Length: 188
Image 1 (tube, helix red, strand yellow):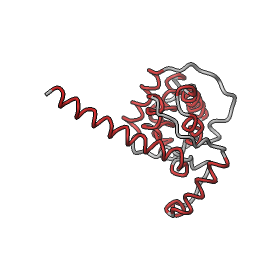
Image 2 (cartoon, helix red, strand yellow):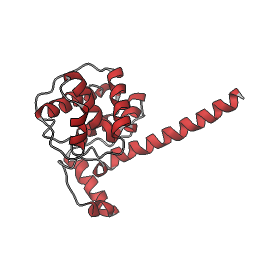
Image 3 (tube, rainbow, N blue to C red):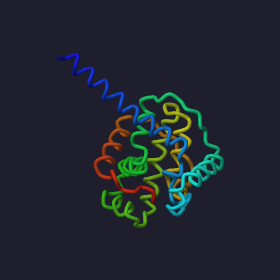
Image 4 (cartoon, rainbow, N blue to C red):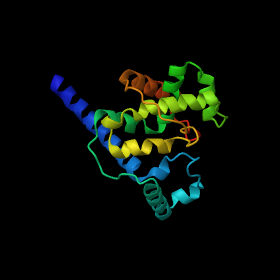
């Protein structure tokens, strides 16, 4: 019975990794799917047309000089890919925990299109720095695309290096999954 359970578990892991790999390819080749609306705001009808969407993706890849190499997926890369659309919420959570200035209600208000305070912008920026601290542990293509998830105004300012902190990253991802799954994060 133990071997049979192990085989079932391995099959489930392979299916999950296959889904993450497909999402990884989408992140690399379909930035129009997730680019922050403050970077590029197009009518959804344009993105529904496959030919136009392909051209838009090529323009984004060329404009930002994005690396399109397909790298092996490390564990950390798989974490980033699996939580891709939640990374702005993860950054917001990490930054707000660090500053202790932002509360949950401001996060929710901003996600539904409300104005983010200067303190909120600083929290997102701080959390973003925590995400990009993982540069050496994630694929180049994923690293280069993280900033496309965020409002460029929020990311303005001098970079402040931070140490990688896996427990903080995990806590932020769990929080985002619990509270923000299904919410559009493109306003951050």
